[in-house]
Length: 363
Picture 1 (spheres, rainbow, N blue to C red):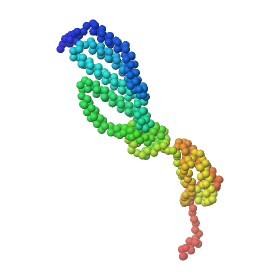
Picture 2: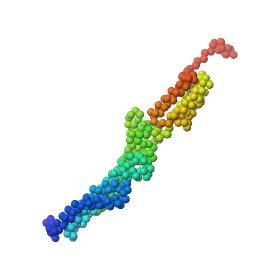
Picture 3: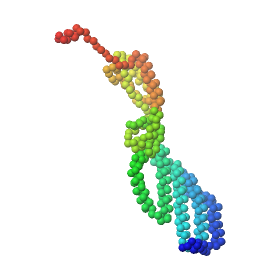
Picture 4: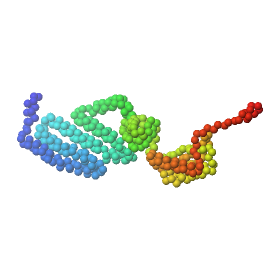
């Protein structure tokens, strides 16, 4: 069909009145698009019944809804202007349906981007209070799904096979999984850390490879700041496969050691010193009173051992060290007052006179 024949067929039966009515429809919808969009938003609020997520949905669909009514006016105007039997009217319907799908996808994409109300609510229902890392990941997954579904629906509207797209995505996912095995392992390790929650940001942890304070957790790795003020990045797959000691989860902090005193210490003074030290710990407000053990337990070659086992109420390392220092100084004071000396390395040598040795030889 030649171009002039197509044009003649297109404008066949169209007069000035039809054009004015078509333009009037378009202008009317342009002027009333705000009114229509407000009505649609109010209907959406009524349908959601003013729930916590109502504000998220209404804000997300405000612009797409207003654009929909504008495009609806353009569609109705062109639809009225074109001859009913014109074969391209079918394509116009497809364009309009595709636009509706895109607008719905746009609004849903915005909702998935605003990951505060919906995903936090899901996290609370699943008893996952620490969702600072989970929410961004779920947001990206939802946005990706929305984009893929929107493209698939628009493609199916124009006759493209969605099955081929799904099959292609499956093969592509398999190839990506094989190529990025380590990355996927780290992501799965991050999911395990989120679900089991062995530690959180700010916790002091100890693993066979690193010790420090957790500074950041992502789905690929965990950043730990050591006590040397260096940051170590550990892959999540490695973190999930090794034992983790979380010192920050302690309710109290243990102090245990054996103190060596001189071998020639007086028995009564040693017993008095032990009694006073135990009483000192029982009266200290910074010491947990559930378990306090102070006993003379060991006879060693160079000292007598006094065993200490008790806990501080604080788990903060600096405060723990301060309490331990004060306790040590008070123990030293008690030992000095009781005349008990601390043991130090000694070596004793015994000399035997020659007459005793000769007598043993003759015998």
